[in-house]
Image 1 (spheres, rainbow, N blue to C red):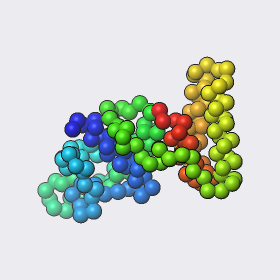
Image 2: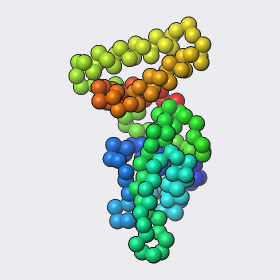
Image 3: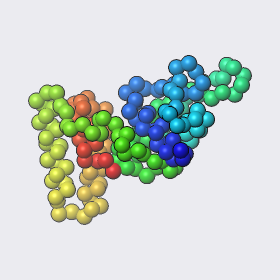
Image 4: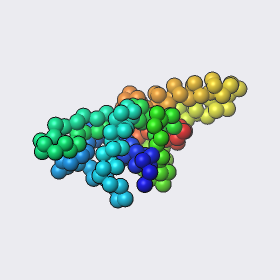
Length: 174
């Protein structure tokens, strides 16, 4: 398995588990093991590379064994999320397995209250209007970038719940 695929698997895993906060990697008991087909060495090298290129936040733990074993906690950051959700250009090659897209990215728009439904529908109409507007692609992209940023905010998640993620996944896959 190539390094770019391993990095993609790791970034996708952290994206899928982002609601958990920082999760353990390395040689600790509770560390996330690498998926089948990926060695622990390659898995931890991917952690180091994603951290080096600032796609994830890494908090190392002191090695108690004296053997130089790498352990710590990793969490996807805003830049890593942007790379996955918006198709942002990563500073290092990352291959994403499209068949492993997260469930949030495949779900239809899900809302739980009438108020959330109204807001979600209004945002969908706005996206459609932007796409159909008589504007340059640059202007359309600028407007959509602002909407993407809004949908990725904590405020949108608070107001729209799953609707914010669903809208972002539906319209801004990259």
